[in-house]
Length: 479
Ligand code: ADP
Ligand code: ADP
Ligand code: MG
Figure 1 (cartoon, protein in one colour):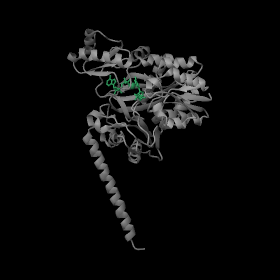
Figure 2: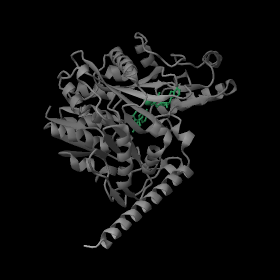
Figure 3: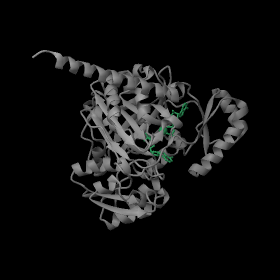
Figure 4: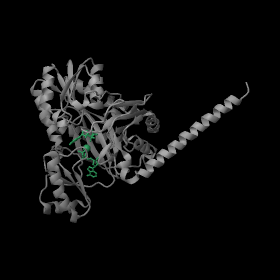
């Protein structure tokens, strides 16, 4: 493998190229007309424009990307996350052209891309599932029966859903019919597949997921958990590893379940098995994401393993040169997704020009970044600017480092989730580890955010005053 093409943009394209470069592999970037001056284009050894700004005309144009790969003598394609990363037809088309797809085989992508097919595949193993129905449901009377059996509230979910989209909570029987109709038509228009099913709505769950990695030699390992319970719109904003609630026994049990999920679909490469953990610490299989996950860096920091390097080695046919027993959790890592979104205004995208942009640097701070000063945040794509990741010997240290790194991160021109990250890190519920996926609706308000800021400013002012007084004292001291 001498040259790889990265079919993605932004921070993840750079993240993958960094490892390729470390391994002595040349890189080809692709970009849309909106990304002409993006850092991922400059970072690559070669870069090719693949079309107009809308994703459908560029980053989702698989044929075009494969044509570029062939023309540029590329040996392999890394899809990153989002875009074509979970597109089974794309993976298959890549392999058909004699190019290696750095990821799972298309069959596994296909199975796990459908939440219903996934449930079916794992049913051969002893893996706890959220109570509900594991078949697409259209008949309203049948739906009522199921919902009554499992008990309200229930969740209607689109089988093909993703990115937090395609879910509807139903509180009472009278709302079931209208909500189901809406869910089906939404699923049809958003995912081109109107299959929906019903799950029990777990009331205070934590989102805990397990990183798995499988090679072509029968090895399937897990790289422990990530906790991703701090979400808005069912989508993660703050992630950490390890979770503050898992015991060693539960961790081992969930790890075993996750490797079984991978086994159930003959998995290859990096994948993530997502679970919900209820208040009594029962866990339930949610879904499997067949790609590198946004939040993979926290796992890298606590295990010391470069997951992209491992993906590339596996794609080259090498066995994983580690055993489960070799893997150890060392320290604690935290990630904040720095989105160009306005936390003061329902986390709506806040696009514009980055008139000021400076990322923090320092020991235990990693920023996987895709932007620089002067750039526009395009309206065409996910508005994530970067991921701010901190590492400490323990959770407390990682949190403190996050708070100070947020203070050193300068963004002007757009609103970001940085103040929200500070709010989370300073909140008692988060600090004590007593939180679930309802953290945002439970605790987060504009007022609370402002209070956090004021307290900070006050603290900064006090520190400044203290330093000033100390200095004065020094000056006054004779000789
Ligand atoms: P994670 O990797 O932790 O699951 P997300 O759920 O945010 O992170 O998804 C990763 C990326 O993929 C995001 O850019 C998200 O917008 C995109 N994405 C995931 N699934 C879908 C989908 N079904 N439709 C559109 N975008 C998706
Ligand atoms: P997606 O494909 O959009 O990532 P998931 O099934 O992974 O969908 O669910 C995303 C989030 O939605 C979870 O992390 C959790 O917060 C919430 N969620 C999903 N299923 C349930 C459920 N049965 N009960 C309560 N919350 C749920
Ligand atoms: Mg999910």
